[in-house]
Amino acid sequence: MLNVGIVGASGYAGEELDKILSRHPKVNLTYLAATSAKENSRIRAFSPQEAVTLCDLLFFALPHTEAMKFIPQILATGRRIVDLGADYRLKNIAEYETWYKAKHLDKQNVMLSVYGLPEAYRKKIKKANLIANPGCYPTVVILALLPLLKKKIIGLGSIVIDAKSGLSGAGRKSVEAGLSEDLKDNFRPYKVNYHQHMPEINQELSKFSGRKISVNFVPHLLPIFRGLLATIYVKTASERAVSEERIRQLYKNFYRNEVFVRIADEGRIPQVKDVSGTNFCDIGIFYHKKNKMLVIVSAIDNLLKGAAGQAVQNMNLMYGFKETDGLI
Ligand SMILES: NC(=O)c1ccc[n+]([C@@H]2O[C@H](COP(=O)([O-])OP(=O)(O)OC[C@H]3O[C@@H](n4cnc5c(N)ncnc54)[C@H](OP(=O)(O)O)[C@@H]3O)[C@@H](O)[C@H]2O)c1
Image (cartoon, rainbow, N blue to C red; front, side, top):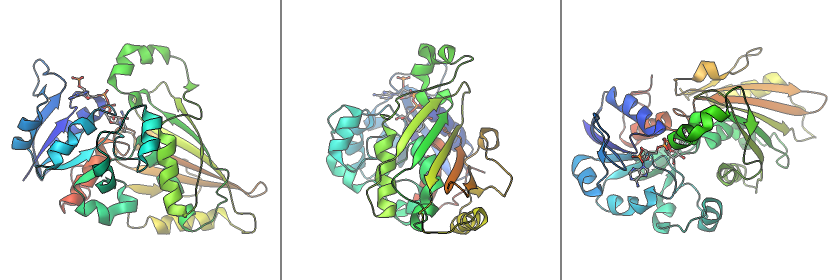
């Protein structure tokens, strides 16, 4: 059995990790920590020294800029880490410092970390000591666009991403500070054109397409607790004739060995309800022939495929467990 721990166990993502790891057949959950100990709970105040004596692998689910304060010393002891935060996702340090408004404290390990999207980096993940678990929006968007980018079917200049998230995406502190009240009978965009997940999406899409991509990305907050859905508009490359069915088949083929990506059949539209509480990503394809406009609808649970579920999927790969262990 593998001994694992959660740092940030009292947060929304940490709580989901606790649930999954407590029922996982191959691990002992030996350590749960947060800033301070919680009353009537297994959660204690975080101590890196204690964490390394009790765990082989640690999940970090801390607000950005916190994890990088501890990760270097823990990695140096030979422990492996899955970081759910943003500190190791952007390979360009200057970009990290601009978007997260903080000096990066561990540039060396940024270069060694592996972006933890199993559908794209499975081989590298297996050998990694540090996983940068993707953000929730990047997960839903990259999975939706990967087959198109690899097959060069779309024009890259005008990718429009209209994404909506349940309020748990903002973390417990924001919700408890009044976000749920603000969203009662309400719905609104936020950080229009300046959400910090935009450079992460651009980084990964550019890597897969071999060209510099700059997406238009507008996130919204929904008055629901969990779930994330993106509607993505892309023009097909004009000289190519495409059909909706051909593209659907391309997606089915591309993801044929992926347990957690489901391509909707014709007439079915992905919805939050179908993925909530699961590690699935549901993707639907719709084509407006006259306008040569492809509409991709992609849905996940932000707390699972967008955070804790994907983190456990990564751990399963790192240790040669069944990829679905604890998740299905
Ligand atoms: N929520 C999502 O849908 C989602 C999706 C993908 C990725 N993520 C990422 O996952 C991370 C956690 O998100 P969340 O939504 O779970 O946040 P959250 O609800 O705000 O929880 C944050 C957790 O971190 C702990 N913490 C903060 N500073 C700490 C420190 N210095 N030492 C030890 N513990 C510390 C908090 O403990 P105390 O309560 O004791 O302060 C709490 O347990 C973030 O980086 C977030 O961007 C979240």
